Image 1 (spheres, helix red, strand yellow):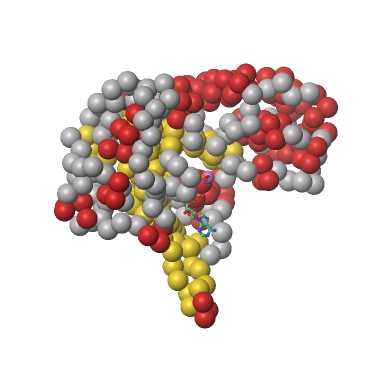
Image 2: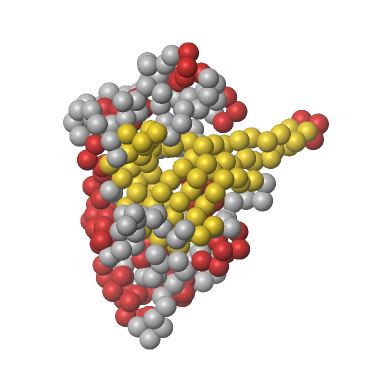
Length: 311
Ligand SMILES: Nc1ncnc2c1ncn2[C@@H]1O[C@H](COP(=O)(O)OP(=O)(O)OP(=O)(O)O)[C@@H](O)[C@H]1O
Ligand code: NI
C-alpha cells in the first residue's frame, strides 16, 4: 500500500495586490511553484533565508493570509481538498500553528486559559498544564499571568505549550526556538521527535539548520518563494555529495561545523527575480537552458530537486 501524505501543497502561488503611485494596482507574486508533502510520523524541516516564503506557507495552510493576498494552487488534508471553510473548521483542532511571533498570544487573557482551550480532556486540564509547565521550567503561578508579564523566552514556551497539549494531527511550528535557553531547546526538539514517533506530523520552520538536522526526517529548502529541494536528513553529511541542488550543497558547506564557506550573493527580491531558475543569477552551473523557465521538480535518489543539472 502506498502511503498518502496527511498534508500536501501543490504548485502554491501567493500574490499581494499593492497600490503604487497614482493609485495603480500592482500584483506582487511572492510565492511560486511551491510544493511540499508531509506524512504522519514525520518531521519535515523547512529551511530558507528570511523572505523565502516559510511563514506565508504556514499561514496559507491555516487560511490566515492577509486580505490583500490571493492564493492559487492545490492543498489536500488526508486526501481531501483543503478549501477555506475546511481550514477554518480544522485549524486549532486537527492542524495547530506555533506562530513565529509571540504577539499571537491574546493580550487580554491569562495564559492558563489560553493553553486550556487546546486541551480536549477537560477533567485533566489542570494536571496537563502543570506537567507541561514543569517540563519547560515555568513556575506554577505563570498560569495566572497575562502575556505582557512574560519574558520573550517564557512567551515562546507558552506558545509551544498551547500546541503541544492539543491532540492535533499536524503541528506547524514557525521558528519555535528563538529565545530559548539550551535546556529548553533540547527539550522542545525531543518533544517534537516523540510526538512524531507517536504518529503526528510536524512541519518545523527554522533558520537553525543544525536544530533541524537533529530531529527532522526530511528537509525542504525554500528560496525566493519556491522549493528548490527536498532531501533526506542523512544527505547533509560532511561531503554533501548526495545533496541535489547547488544551493543546498552550498548551504551545507556554509555550516559552521563543516567548512563555514559562505555563499556569494543574496536571494533576489520578489520584484527582481531572474528569468528561469530562481537561483540562476548565483549559480556556477548556469547554462542558457536555466534562463528558459523554472525547472521542473524532479525525483532523484528518494528526494526532489528543481535544477536542470542535478544528477
Ligand atoms: N503582507 C505582505 N505584503 C506584501 N508582501 C509580503 C507580505 N507578507 C510577506 N510578504 C513578502 O513575502 C515574502 C515571503 O515572506 P515570509 O514572511 O513568508 O518569509 P519567511 O521565509 O517566513 O521569512 P523570515 O525567516 O524572516 O520569517 C517576502 O518577500 C515578504 O516581503
Ligand atoms: Ni517567517
